[in-house]
Length: 267
Length: 222
View 1 (cartoon, rainbow over the protein chains, first blue to last red):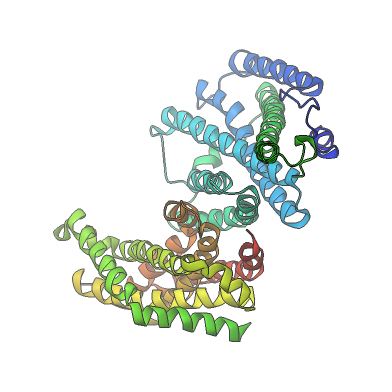
View 2: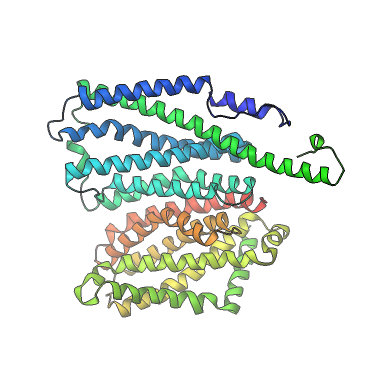
């Protein structure tokens, strides 16, 4: 879906008077959005009403239906950001850079959601919001690494400068996440065995709970895709405006000087 | 490449020898951090003793950041960046040279800080082989990653605030590894520390490779 849009924009040169897209929505994304809404409503129904309480964790287990898919998608987005960065460095296409940027931003959002829901789950289950567990710590580090990438991409500098620098940072995102995870895991497991997740989740999910979790993956996955498409289009439009703004300004100056007509001004 | 690296490293170190910015400002800052830790954590309660390896490496990271900022601010003036590109030096050589110069300054800083910690925090120094190996690989890791992220944030108005945000999360494995290795060495159980030296070596190699490959494109832009 995203490919189509990009080709549409990439294909034609920016000609004054051509109808520029004024919204980030299209028929495809409206259908996707509708599906997302339905899936989220179903998820709410199954997660909050139909699925049973957990014998150990009680109602707190219901957070899992958002928490686990969010975490998975946060890592997916991180992988997409690195893939986009590699492709940008290789192909020099703005499309890939903006895919990386949009994925990183949404990955940061989902990482934050993961941390927040995890804390809300931890408070009733463990009695504290935060423990220095390997997973928690490395997820927090993931968020900081993503924020660093986003900061570079938002630098007050020319597009080519910040895109190139951001894609170097983005390229190192996944290796960094792996090495940070590894070190944090060693750091914690040298002291204590990871006991937190070995007895509660994962071992005995079945029936309606498993189905709700499955539904969670679908609903949050659709939400991720919808957000990604829209964020990408927004970023694309932003860059177009920036580039166009300069073209228009150059054309106006030239027209003032009485030289070339505005329409012929080369970018 | 090696010849270019030595040229650039020599230039940076000569610059430091003549300006003495690291010696006159960064080393005192590092010692100041040690004193501040003592103020924050009452030396009589034993907290300082237990936390010595961690405090040492946090002090190294913070003062190392200053050394890195300095290493790139000398390139920012008078269009030095363009002149480096025009010089015909191999970009990989420039990267290695900058990293070498930073590493050399960090080593001096670490020795002085080590003396400071041993004296001020009354540490019994033990486990020399592990301590030395840790210092070497951690320094290589900090210099390699720091130089790469240094050039990412170089030449921008926001460089002072951007570099710490980019670099410190990335250096988390170095801080964890070097601190655990130091604890193992000082605690008399060096076998616990060697896996960390291995992890930090992987980190350093990864960043040297990334820097050698990535420095060219970064230098050529704009």
